Length: 441
Image (cartoon, rainbow, N blue to C red):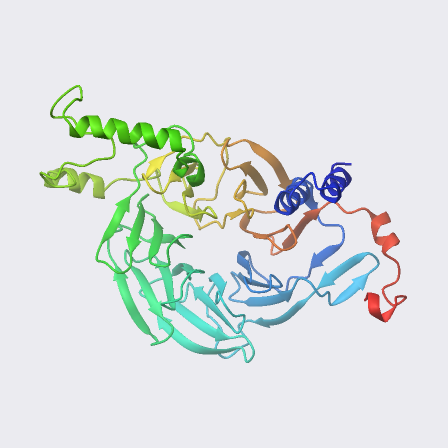
């Protein structure tokens, strides 16, 4: 009923196109359930560690597993149809029988952000490989000092081709595909780095989460990290949207100028006071900290235990983190404060990284919680939906923005598809696809 009401409102001009699209998407997401019309046939013989759908077409799914295999699926074109269920087998699989395959578990597999012609894998065999998709051959290889937990590339980058790699070593390494060498080494963590994530607002900012419980922000153009998140620094609530804060009416602007003029003329309540937003020309811009305080801030932790998952919101203003302390925390990126959003109690894996997923507008976040996946409201912390279907722990989630579908992989070696509810009657009403005019196909 809601869908048809939204369509009628759009036809009559009551709702704008973008608002209409968002309502339809939200309605579809709220109806997510185990798909009754799509199935992925997994060739993996070990736990699924990571899954990702390409950013260019939203069509090809890349998965990696603990049996050292990597597979690619076409999620739009089925391999075969069994009644009303479309089955998708992998287009190809790279396993131990391949001469250049990894020797141990593949912990991370990601697409090259702007082209499906390349994909990158990280493995417990201490290697990061860059593969040519068409020939399934390794074109660049990087030798790491330890097990590779996570790899990531910036989707915004126009100036570099860097792969950030988090390993069991304390240093984060940036691998340059163009030169085939290490471009940077980022030092600061006191234990292995379990997860890495690039900023959604800058191609130069990298976020890392370590087994030491620290979350660090790096500007890769400069030495050292510029921010360490501290769980004791908090601010209540979510910052208002940027547009609302930046809009100043003519009346308020006039009042502000009048107030500033009073202060300039010395008519303020105190001769030494300055209006809000003005800085004194005397003295340093930032208070100089005692060396001991600097050391304390550098040792700050975001979780009591390893940081196992990171996810930046679409606008880049907030960061969601998961830890082995079974806590989810939402951080304000600008201030570095915990927003104190109280997420409902969860049980999270502690021994390996988990892959979080968000909807396009970042209103919902999907979190692997042992055998189930919980969909939390990002800003209130309430659990909207609990998705049950896996027989063992879930490791990874990926939300496909094109079709509003969720893909999950777990230790049961299965990749499950969660899609909006679809009735069998709808399938029957579609008719035989062969019985159509040429112009309508």
